Length: 350
Ligand code: ATP
Ligand code: MG
Image 1 (cartoon, helix red, strand yellow):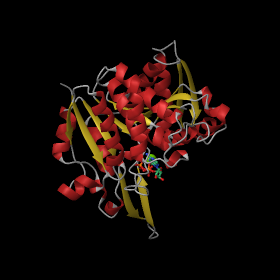
Image 2 (cartoon, rainbow, N blue to C red):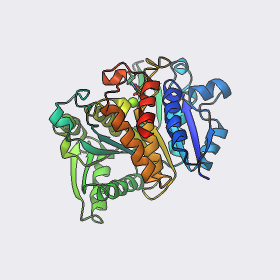
Image 3 (cartoon, protein in one colour):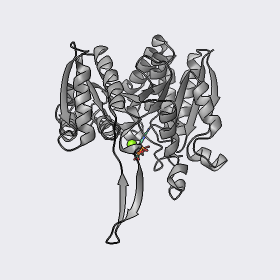
Image 4 (cartoon, rainbow, N blue to C red):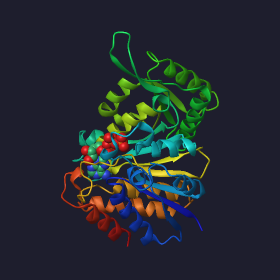
C-alpha cells in the first residue's frame, strides 16, 4: 500500500491540506497516510523546523503532500532555525531539483486574471524551476565594509551538472507537451546564466525535435503578460522561477490556483507536491484561503508518483466544475470560504 506523507506546516498550510485530504478520502484509493511536523509548527514543538523524524518519513514515503511553511513569530530566529529552511532542506536532502509548475486558465476565471480575457485564455504553459542551486543555497552572510557599512551577500552559483539535469528535464517535458522550450536566464550580465545558456545549448544536440529559444528574464517577465500564449515550457533557475511563477499565477487568476510537483529526476516516481504559494500569514486562520492549488497538487501527485491518471483527471475536472459553478474564494473575487470551496469540489467529484 502506498504511503503518503502529509506535511501541512504553517499558516494556511493546514487549512488547505485539510481540504486536499477530504478529496483523497472521498476518492478512497487505499493509501496509508502519515502526518509529520514541519516549519514553524515543528520548531515550536521540537526546536527544529525539519525534525529528523519528518525527514525520515519523507524518505520512506511514496509521495509527500506539503502545505506551506513560514511563521512570522520565527522571524528573529537565526536562519538555520527558520521555517523556510524546512522546505529548502527537504528539496536538497531528497534531491528534488525539478519543480514543475503548470499554469492554465480555468474557464470562468477570465475575470480574475490580471490580463485581458483573450490573452489569458491562451495560457497553457509549464514553468520548470530549478530547486537545488542558485543564490538560495550559496554562501551567504553579513559583514562590515572598510567604511563601516553593513553589507549582506549571497553567492549565486550553478555547476554544469546541475544545469544539465534541469535542462534535460526541460527538453523531456517539452517533448511530452508541444515541443517548445524557452530557457530563461540573464546571460548578458551573469556568469551563472552564461554557463546555463551554454549547457542548455549543448544539451539541445540530443533533442533536435524540440524548438529551443532563449530569453532574458526581464524580457520573459514582460512577455508573460504581453503574450503568454507563446510559451510551452519555460526552464529557468531557482530565483527567476520563483518570481516568474508567482507572476504567472496572476495571469491565470490567483496564486491560490497553481499546483506544483518537485521531482528528483524526470523518470523518478518519488515527488513532493505543494501549492506554489506560501503560508499566507495575512489570511491564516480566517477560512479565506483558496484550497484549489493544494487540491490540484493532489492530482499532480496521483499522476506523477502513483501512476493513477484517472483519479487525477477526476480531481481536475471537479475543480473546473466548482469554478464553473461560480464558487470563488476571496482571492478570486468571491466570498466563499476554504471549506465551501472544498465542499464544491467534493460535490463535483461525487
Ligand atoms: P513564500 O516565500 O513561502 O513563497 P510569499 O511571501 O511569497 O511566501 P505567500 O504566502 O505566497 O507569500 O502569500 C502572498 C500573498 O498571496 C498573500 O497576500 C497571501 O494572502 C496570498 N495568498 C497566498 N496563498 C493564497 C491562497 N491559497 N488563497 C488566497 N490567497 C493566498
Ligand atoms: Mg512566494
